[in-house]
Length: 110
Image (cartoon, rainbow, N blue to C red; front, top):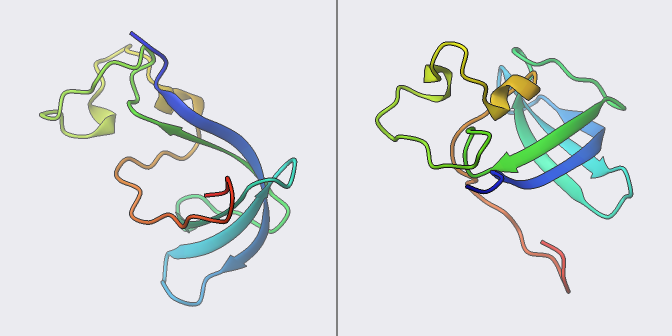
């Protein structure tokens, strides 16, 4: 099996917009080396953040540490067996689902 991680980067929160939704804020971030900027909708009621906070963001194909495919019949990411480690154990806030939109930049930028 292979590693499940596709992307892992630390970001600095540069702005927070809480105007559109009650519990979700749109945060703007920049990577530590300023090469990547990301806009992310985050449930700030569950995971409060502030401008200048640092976040580590990881995108993965599976929450299983060995990268193996998850059984779609499970009840969600919390359905891991008792004592079974997962990628979720390494983070304070976990979202599971699909990336709904990304914007391509110029040149080699996404």
